[in-house]
Length: 390
Image 1 (cartoon, rainbow, N blue to C red):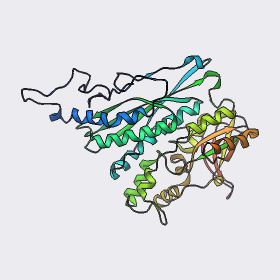
Image 2 (cartoon, one colour):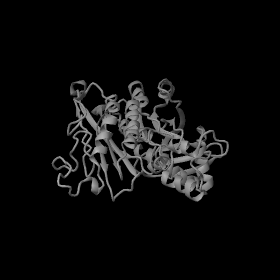
Image 3 (cartoon, one colour):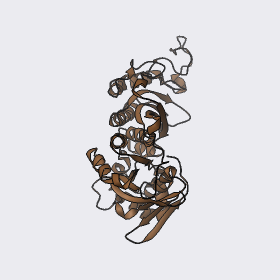
């Protein structure tokens, strides 16, 4: 398994003493300038690697070959299990949610968000997530901080059922301040070519099933931070909102739900015609990505309970409901499109996998648009023709 954590950085998780692709770095016996003098402490990188080795191994699937230390992660792909396998890949980051973790010094769960953002994109194509790689950039490498970050990635991989086969930790003095970090990753999955989920078979009359999200997940944090922390000057250690049983920090750092295992179970039992991971762009932007040009999706916002945090952001920021819908998930993190005859079965399967899914709308004749409405008020909401990235 690869652990190249090299770069302009620390040694890789794989090769202590190698830092930037050159020969092993050793202290200058003549007392000259060292890498540590430039802000990169190799020994801290080695300590971080030792802290995470055991955790990373807990994610290994039978297909993982070798151990931590190579230049690339080795995964024995069992091609004979498939008639015509297609690899599906996705990459993402945690965005400015990292700034909330940084402000609180709480790093143990944000790695779950990272894995969720990637594997839940992969599964939308009908692919089983196989393996994952992460990249951690820091201003000053603190082995304890890195250990917590990787702890979250490990937990996310365990929830998703994929192996963490490699990664990189890079120290960037001068480019980032001590305490600052960024966290990105990539996931690879596999699907049968004739079972790829593309949205091409979506038809008028199909049902939209929403899987709940308990909060912001990992999107819209630039706006949420501006409203809550800057303009409203709320304390991260204060209540998330009036009557809340947890702090604002708890609310904003709540890890994303990982939908991939439940969706894989659904794909094995029900004919799923499309899947939309609700990330950046909200429901309109992401659901539009899987609609054929001859249908629209009508989503009824009165069919699920929106988590309170969204109402607080909207109220404190004076944000228009349409803008909220374009930025945040509003309590729905994944949408599955199924035929009406499959609705009951799909709800049962998702319930057995731990998600209380509900019909949140339907597909109607149209031109590839998404309409958010509220049957309680009879008012139409946002309309989108396109989609934004996750």
